[in-house]
Image 1 (tube, one colour):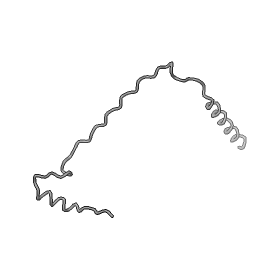
Image 2 (cartoon, one colour):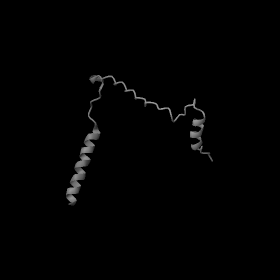
Image 3 (tube, one colour):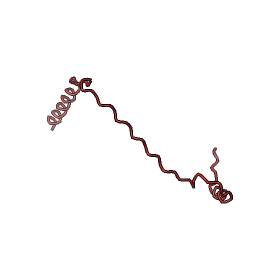
Image 4 (tube, helix red, strand yellow):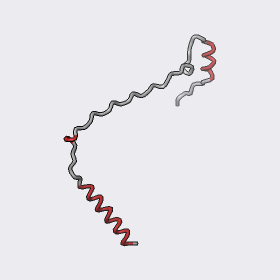
Length: 73
């Protein structure tokens, strides 16, 4: 079990010690996130531009599904 502190006594302690600043009294501006540097440009000669067989399989399966739906209609 964990003990939850009583926040009402925190205000009383802050009034008794005027030189002490509580964490709630200090406000900080939110930190701005740093932008990530842009990645270097790719050399077009290094890009793999071969045909992918998945494209033809996906197109054939779409045609088969649509054909089957039209046949069952």
